[in-house]
Amino acid sequence: MKSFALFRKDWESELRTRYAINALAMFVLVTISVIMFSVGDEKISEYLTGGLLWVVIFFSAMSGLSRAFVSEEERGTTLTLQLIASPTTIFSGKLLFNLILVFLMNIAITVLFSMLFESFLIKNVSLFLIAFFLGNIGIAISSTMIAAIISKASSKGTLYPVLSFPILLPLILTLLELTKFSMDGNSISGSTIEIAVLFSYDVIMGTASYLLFDFIWKD
Amino acid sequence: MTSYSVELNDLVKYFGRRLIFDGINYSFESGHVYGISGPNGSGKSTLVKIIACLISPTKGKVKHTFAGKVVEEEALHNYLGFVSPYLFLYDEFTAEENLAHVSKVRGIKFNKERSDFLLSEFNLYERRNDLLRGFSSGMKQRLKFAFALLHEPQLLILDEPTSNLDSSGKEKVYEFIQSEGKTKVVLVASNEETDLALCEKIVELRDFKNQASRK
Image 1 (tube, chains in turn cyan, brown):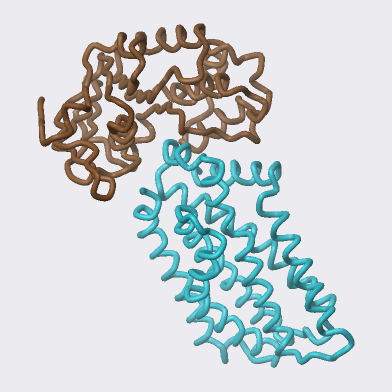
Image 2 (tube, helix red, strand yellow; image 1 turned 90 degrees about the horizontal axis):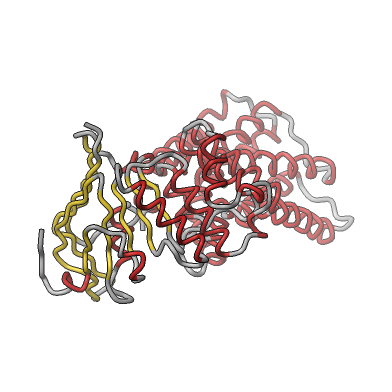
């Protein structure tokens, strides 16, 4: 309940300040527009659109998800949070906020992709949805943790993608593979190893984040 | 027995290679107002942050006890009220929204009656529905007291409590320090003589710079 209260506080604050939503919306629109201008009338392959989808998602996450902690640090309200909640509550609340943001952002990106790119055709929708669901959870957990780390640093803008790349790379590679499988129409039972990798990634990152957050949060 | 106590055992703090203080042994008990004084840079704010478990000491320990039981660091925020110039509330919320959010995140039901009482006491009731971004620094300082006192904490840490306040604001703060100090632990970190005049005991940080220690 405390985490949910923190999420509500962040959500109401976001609706008033538009710290993350504006950054994300602009980034998504600009990136997709650039891709469309670059492609022009050329017909691009299915696999390439699948790859581009995750590239856009990865960089959109870079531009918006760090706000969860960076905005607190910039406004000087980190101390206020430390005084009203335990580290576990803070991490859970921020994670919930980023989860909602990631799902909203990625649903919008995927819908835009399916409307704008003819070759973005998913033959096994269930497999894609499983990958999408587990992938979003992984992106939200990793981004929340990295945001907490970089919020204490002076060069936040550059540090976020640098730290995110090695942490998110195994996740993005697995997601690319599963997107390719879902475009080929592979069955879920034929993709269990990749799904297990995604699931394990989420569990490992989730556990590590909860264990390590206390150390990151306190000076 | 619902007394609160804070024990500082051999506290040492370095920032890099610079010694801030060394060998602080002290104990704070309910029903007293304590002062922490020292020149600029002597570590007053650092000490109160260590007491509030916001930063760690280089060596030594801080032990919080309530009603004979040790208060775990994870739960300390429920017992602690903190006011300082480097504490900021949310500018995009109104005064009342700030207090309501803070209560809910703490896991306690928002007590509107208590909130109204504190806002009236600190002369903010009429402005309770205004966004904080329109508040002056003195009004924000007054609101910090409502924030610190809302959940009726057992330990009240006031770092430079009267900064930005006008004379009526200072009077109100002194009134609260005296009334809260009757039953709770109140720590006032300040250089202002008028602030320290309210304190029964004063920890002088100058004395803890060179391996000195005292009880």
